[in-house]
Length: 315
Image (cartoon, rainbow, N blue to C red; front, top):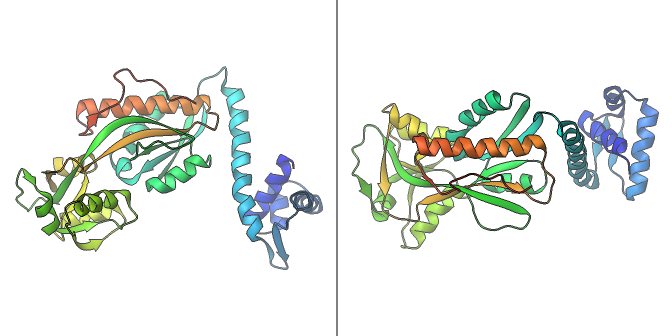
């Protein structure tokens, strides 16, 4: 199995045609087809269905495609690591952010990276923690900021902060200083679906007290959730930092929830089974510094639980 065979196979899958793939790869079509056939022979499986309309990956081909992309990405990382070993950090770094973390941290991280690491191109992926964890473990992310400090094989997690969850309401509503879980359960709520980690924390806290939430709408987009609350459709529950801008502008109000379980820990996670690059290590350190500064300045209203003197994650 050779890297060029993997490149030809990935190109054929993405182009949907051996002819188009040969043009992209600047190689004769017969030669490209022979290399893919040799790859299939080596693996003992047919990877492509060929027809007059082009090519599509078989079920085996779909499985192999994901692995081929990871292998090629690792090869590129290795090439960049050698080039960067005596130079300034450069190249692409893939960063995963949960949706609520992204609301608070995306712009500060991007701004700091452009200023301090101008030759690094950040690829930001915003998604649920489970999806980010899977991509991190498969090597498609270099690091991720997640809401989960539980130990997992192959992942190193550095605690950063405890994010308080608050009841969020339209600015038109008068709110008490804090609400009990019983009062929260009676309130009309706009929340993400049950597969969202935030929703599971809320549901678990209610279940311990045999409470059932009054969910009037489920919306997966957190920006749309905030707009619905601003319009008075219902209340929601979010980390305080994710609504700081709207609160400062007088568009939303928040109140504390009287339950210690209504908080989440943010961690910086990397895959310790995969080698890190100079660029990814630099981005990790930059992110730790940016987040700590945000917490200490009040830009991210949370409790810092990271090291007083930050250290890079192992990698």
